[in-house]
Length: 265
Image (cartoon, rainbow, N blue to C red):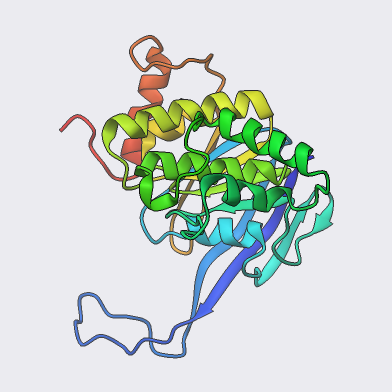
C-alpha cells in the first residue's frame, strides 16, 4: 500500500546568511526563522502518480525529502499507510536527481542491493535479471556506471529502486541533464512502468509537459510561504497528446500562466 496523508504540514528553517546590502533584494536577517512550507494538506491515493510543479526554490524537493523521511516537518502530520513517518524506509524509496549508483559496482551488483534479503542465490539472480529486463538494460548487466549513458544510468537506478519492492517511489527531477530524445524515451518508460507495477509514484519536475503527460494528478506549489496553488486530477486517457486533447492543451496554457510564463511568446 502507498497511501499518503499530509495535514497542516509546515517547514521552517533558521536563516544562516547575513542581510544583503542590496536594498532591492535584501536577505532575511541572520538567525531569522524562514517558513518554506505552510499548512500543506494533501492526500495521495495508493497507486497514483502525482507530479509536483512550482517555481525554483518554492520547496518542492523539501516536501519530497520530508515525505521520504530525510528531514522532519516542523508542524502538522505526515502518515504513510496510517503510520507516522519517523525516518527513511525501504517502503518509500527516493530516486535522486543525479545518479546514486555505486560506481565500483556493475549494474547487476547495484540492483542486487535491493535483493540482499534473498538467501537463495539462484532466485536472487533470476530477479536481478527480471528487473534489468524491466528497464531494458539486457546485455549491460556487467557494465559499470561509467560505461553507461545518462539515460541508461537512470534506468539502472530505477531497477535498483524497484528491486526493493517499495510501496512508494519518490523521484526528484529524474530527467534532468538528459538530451531531448533520451528524455522523451525515459518519460515513456516511466509511464509504462507505473502502469505495470501500480506503485505510488511522486515526481518533482520543472517541465510542465512532463507533469501533464505523465501524472494522474498535478500539484502546483506556490506563494510565500509555499502552499498548494492547484491540485488537479488529470482524467485524460493515455497515451496523451496535446494535439488530440484540446482541454489538456488549455490546461497547459493555464499552468504556464499560473507559473508566470506567457507560453504564447
